[in-house]
Length: 238
Image (cartoon, rainbow, N blue to C red; front, top):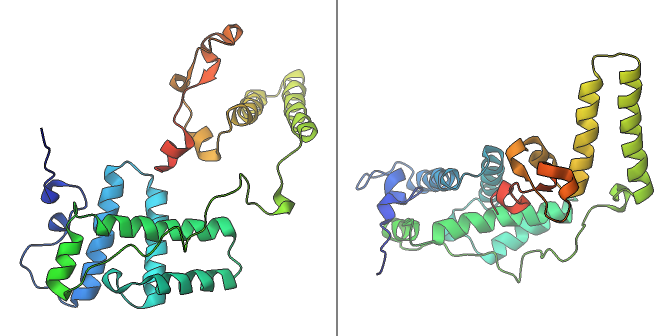
């Protein structure tokens, strides 16, 4: 059985953002604004974080301002000049890749025929957007860590010292009868949880009791032997 997707019913579709048959004042500017609004709706439908959506939108707006043109006019040369400009400002490799990913994701959305933007552009301007970010002009993620050497990971000895210091703070506060010892105990536990499961700050913040479960290989920990929460890719909508 073949399933036909009706563009008008898809979140972020052009027909849901624009009024059909209505002529736009400053059509190029208004159509671009409608595209970014449609992209926002599409990302909200995917349950992406508001911060992620806002950051991506800002990056696309910066690219548009740099080129002083619109998606149906963008070319690979525009993108490459923009990346070169960002590099000249000293932007880190990981930040460059994030910037490129935002533009690539936006163009992936507006070029998808499901949303009807290419057809809308062709009807109004006689041309349509194309994907200008390819594996030939974007940065690949080739190594586990791209951080600066000055921001290296802690060694095992340093990690152990950190955990010991946190535990000692708890023991000292409890020994002195201070009310804050439970908060210190919480923090010491979170340090270990974040390290044990490789969690990021936002992932730690969203942890709930239901994210933990039995680990068949470590029954001694009972109902809290494994963390079955969302993976990093799911947290950030990758």
